Structure formats: structure tokens, C-alpha cells
Figure (cartoon, rainbow, N blue to C red):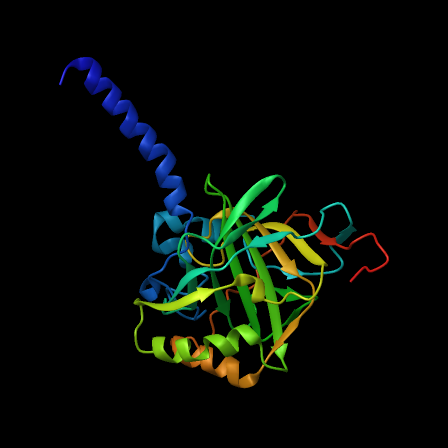
Length: 274
């Protein structure tokens, strides 16, 4: 290989590293054995940032999630626009990550658009109890729909649930949860699943800039939390927690400081206003 060819090869490798590594490290950690949600553990959420250098943002970041959606800090606006979900059916798999159950769409399941950027829907997972709170109130369950743009930016939609009538998605997933209870880390087929079946029920939502709520706690995540709290049955919550079956009994990160962040509540400026 001549000098010119070697030089071009070196440049290519350097660019590959620069662009690929930030993209890879922005992802949630799939292997749960190195961290726990037990606040009394040396590997608990108060110490996540000490376990690996690439997790340092968990302790040092000032835009961390989850937060309390306090109405004292909320600015009501109609300028954010409706949450337009352009989803589609796609083949999916379920994996018991040891700290949660994650449903992943193979090749993505459509997208949402925020500030002229498209974010592809890649996966969803559940936290029990909810990670976010509203005016200090914590709910029984929280669903996260995780989206990513082509340049690695992340946007998450959160939906919270209280005890009540069964949730249709959880009803459909129940046999898959039970099947995955003893197969941690193994992807099992769920088949074609349409994310448009996930009910939101309101056009109102909270919006703020935050982070992933698991290591590496990557920041500058666009969070959209649906204002309407939906319902799931007590039996459904028991099924999903039994399937995960970790030692902490919960998989919700403690509330993080809001610091100087803005927190907006989108409310449509029209007669329907729901």
C-alpha cells in the first residue's frame, strides 16, 4: 500500500470512530448485572456514575431524568404543536433485560417528528412504579417509547398508568412476559405489532430536555410525557414485575434535580382542547 492510500485509510478509520462511537454509547445498557435500582447498594442509582467512566453523566449531568413535573415550574403553551405519530406495523421481539422488559421493532415501526427532525420508533419498555411524578405523585407504571434520529439523537414518549381497568397492550403481552420470565437476555419473537394500538387518550403533553434513565444516562434527550394518566390492572403490574424478577422489586430511578430547565405543557388552542 502506498503512502497516499495509507493516508486515506487512516482518515476513513478516524472518521468512522468519531461518528460511530457517540452513536453507540448513547444507547441504554442491555446487561443489568453491573447496576441495580437498590438505593442502598454500592451499584445503586446513587453510584451509577462511578461504575464506568462512560457512565459518569449519571452523577455529573445537570439534565438528568426522571423529574417531578411540578405545575409550579410549568409554562403552558400551544406553540409546540400536536404530537404527530406516523407509526406502522412491524415485526417485533421481546427481551427480558433483567431490569425491564423491552419490546424491540426490527427495522423500526415508523416515526415521530419534532422540530423538523424525524425520530424512528425502535423499542418500548416499562418501569414500575413510574419514574416521573406529577406534583410529587408517583404512579404505578410508566411506558417509554424510545425513538432515535439518523444522527443518533433520542426522543422518548412516556405514558403513566394507575391501577384500574386492564391495558390492552399489556393484555396482549402477558403470555410473552410469562414466557420470557426464565430467559433473561434472550430475544423471543412476538410477531407483527402495530404501535398505533398504544392508546394515549389526550393531546396534552409535557415537554422537557433530559436524559436516559438508565446508564449511561445520556443527556439531551427530548422527553414528551403524556398528561393523561391511563390505567392498568393490578394483575398486569404483578405479571410484568414477576417476569423481570430482579432483587430491587422496582425499576424506577429516583427523581433528579430540575436545575434551571424549562418545563412546558402543550395545550391545544382550540375548542376541543382535550
